[in-house]
Length: 143
Image 1 (cartoon, helix red, strand yellow):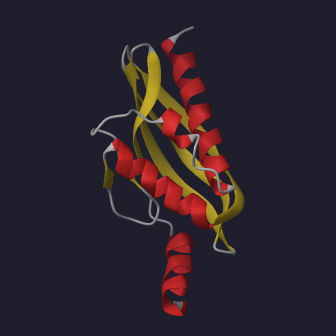
Image 2 (tube, rainbow, N blue to C red):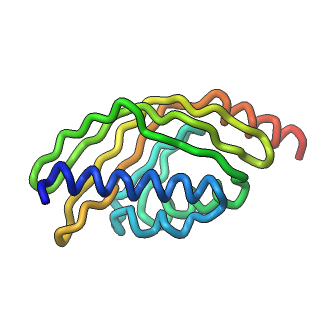
Protein backbone atom coordinates (compact mmCIF):
# COMPACT_ATOMS: atom_id res chain seq x y z
CA UNK A 1 0.00 0.00 0.00
CA UNK A 2 1.29 3.48 -0.83
CA UNK A 3 2.00 6.09 1.85
CA UNK A 4 -0.97 8.11 0.55
CA UNK A 5 -3.36 5.17 0.98
CA UNK A 6 -1.96 4.40 4.42
CA UNK A 7 -2.47 8.02 5.54
CA UNK A 8 -6.00 7.99 4.13
CA UNK A 9 -6.69 4.88 6.23
CA UNK A 10 -5.20 6.58 9.33
CA UNK A 11 -7.43 9.61 8.68
CA UNK A 12 -10.50 7.38 8.40
CA UNK A 13 -9.60 5.76 11.74
CA UNK A 14 -9.24 9.20 13.37
CA UNK A 15 -12.60 10.48 12.08
CA UNK A 16 -14.27 7.21 13.08
CA UNK A 17 -12.79 7.68 16.59
CA UNK A 18 -13.94 11.32 16.60
CA UNK A 19 -17.48 10.25 15.79
CA UNK A 20 -17.39 7.51 18.42
CA UNK A 21 -16.30 10.24 20.90
CA UNK A 22 -19.33 12.31 19.80
CA UNK A 23 -21.46 9.38 20.93
CA UNK A 24 -19.75 9.06 24.31
CA UNK A 25 -16.98 6.55 23.58
CA UNK A 26 -13.47 8.01 23.69
CA UNK A 27 -11.69 4.61 23.82
CA UNK A 28 -10.91 4.41 20.07
CA UNK A 29 -8.95 7.70 20.31
CA UNK A 30 -6.21 5.90 22.25
CA UNK A 31 -5.29 3.81 19.20
CA UNK A 32 -5.09 6.58 16.58
CA UNK A 33 -2.65 8.87 18.42
CA UNK A 34 1.13 8.58 18.66
CA UNK A 35 1.91 7.56 22.24
CA UNK A 36 4.46 10.29 22.80
CA UNK A 37 5.02 13.51 24.67
CA UNK A 38 5.18 15.09 21.20
CA UNK A 39 1.43 14.60 20.62
CA UNK A 40 -0.41 17.94 20.60
CA UNK A 41 -3.96 19.13 20.01
CA UNK A 42 -5.40 22.60 19.58
CA UNK A 43 -9.14 22.09 19.88
CA UNK A 44 -12.08 24.17 18.64
CA UNK A 45 -12.64 25.42 22.22
CA UNK A 46 -9.14 26.87 22.46
CA UNK A 47 -6.05 25.96 24.38
CA UNK A 48 -3.31 23.52 23.59
CA UNK A 49 -2.95 20.01 24.99
CA UNK A 50 0.54 18.52 25.01
CA UNK A 51 1.50 14.89 25.46
CA UNK A 52 -0.39 11.71 24.66
CA UNK A 53 -2.05 11.32 28.08
CA UNK A 54 -3.26 14.94 28.14
CA UNK A 55 -4.57 14.79 24.58
CA UNK A 56 -6.46 11.53 25.19
CA UNK A 57 -7.87 12.91 28.46
CA UNK A 58 -9.21 15.98 26.62
CA UNK A 59 -11.16 13.80 24.17
CA UNK A 60 -12.45 11.72 27.11
CA UNK A 61 -13.79 14.88 28.79
CA UNK A 62 -15.75 15.76 25.66
CA UNK A 63 -17.03 12.18 25.33
CA UNK A 64 -18.33 12.36 28.91
CA UNK A 65 -20.73 15.20 27.98
CA UNK A 66 -21.29 14.35 24.30
CA UNK A 67 -24.69 13.21 23.18
CA UNK A 68 -24.35 12.54 19.48
CA UNK A 69 -23.38 14.13 16.24
CA UNK A 70 -21.52 13.44 13.06
CA UNK A 71 -18.28 15.08 11.99
CA UNK A 72 -16.91 14.67 8.47
CA UNK A 73 -13.77 15.89 6.77
CA UNK A 74 -14.44 17.75 3.53
CA UNK A 75 -12.02 19.22 0.98
CA UNK A 76 -9.31 16.83 2.17
CA UNK A 77 -5.76 17.42 0.95
CA UNK A 78 -2.84 15.21 1.98
CA UNK A 79 0.88 15.67 1.46
CA UNK A 80 2.57 12.41 2.46
CA UNK A 81 6.29 11.79 2.75
CA UNK A 82 8.04 8.63 3.85
CA UNK A 83 7.43 9.10 7.59
CA UNK A 84 5.35 12.27 8.01
CA UNK A 85 2.15 13.53 6.42
CA UNK A 86 0.06 16.70 6.64
CA UNK A 87 -3.68 16.64 6.06
CA UNK A 88 -5.83 19.75 5.70
CA UNK A 89 -9.53 20.19 5.14
CA UNK A 90 -12.77 21.40 6.66
CA UNK A 91 -14.51 19.55 9.47
CA UNK A 92 -18.27 19.83 9.07
CA UNK A 93 -21.29 18.39 10.83
CA UNK A 94 -22.77 18.61 14.31
CA UNK A 95 -21.81 17.77 17.88
CA UNK A 96 -24.23 17.59 20.81
CA UNK A 97 -22.59 18.84 24.01
CA UNK A 98 -24.54 18.48 27.27
CA UNK A 99 -27.79 18.46 25.31
CA UNK A 100 -26.93 21.47 23.12
CA UNK A 101 -26.21 21.01 19.43
CA UNK A 102 -23.26 22.85 17.89
CA UNK A 103 -22.82 23.21 14.16
CA UNK A 104 -19.30 22.22 13.12
CA UNK A 105 -17.64 24.01 10.22
CA UNK A 106 -13.97 24.80 10.74
CA UNK A 107 -10.63 24.36 9.05
CA UNK A 108 -8.39 21.61 10.32
CA UNK A 109 -4.78 20.52 10.03
CA UNK A 110 -3.74 17.01 11.07
CA UNK A 111 -0.16 15.79 11.17
CA UNK A 112 0.60 12.08 11.02
CA UNK A 113 3.87 10.28 11.68
CA UNK A 114 4.84 6.76 10.66
CA UNK A 115 6.27 4.82 13.59
CA UNK A 116 7.11 1.11 13.34
CA UNK A 117 5.18 0.95 10.07
CA UNK A 118 1.96 2.49 11.47
CA UNK A 119 0.67 5.99 10.75
CA UNK A 120 -0.42 7.77 13.94
CA UNK A 121 -1.83 11.21 14.57
CA UNK A 122 0.71 13.49 16.25
CA UNK A 123 -1.04 16.87 15.92
CA UNK A 124 -4.64 18.04 15.45
CA UNK A 125 -5.44 21.76 15.08
CA UNK A 126 -8.80 23.34 14.28
CA UNK A 127 -10.18 26.85 14.08
CA UNK A 128 -12.01 28.06 17.15
CA UNK A 129 -15.72 27.18 17.17
CA UNK A 130 -17.97 30.02 18.24
CA UNK A 131 -20.87 27.56 18.60
CA UNK A 132 -18.95 25.30 20.99
CA UNK A 133 -17.57 28.22 22.96
CA UNK A 134 -21.10 29.61 23.34
CA UNK A 135 -22.38 26.28 24.70
CA UNK A 136 -19.52 26.08 27.20
CA UNK A 137 -20.13 29.71 28.27
CA UNK A 138 -23.83 28.95 28.87
CA UNK A 139 -22.96 25.79 30.83
CA UNK A 140 -20.53 27.73 33.02
CA UNK A 141 -23.13 30.45 33.67
CA UNK A 142 -25.71 27.83 34.66
CA UNK A 143 -23.32 26.11 37.07
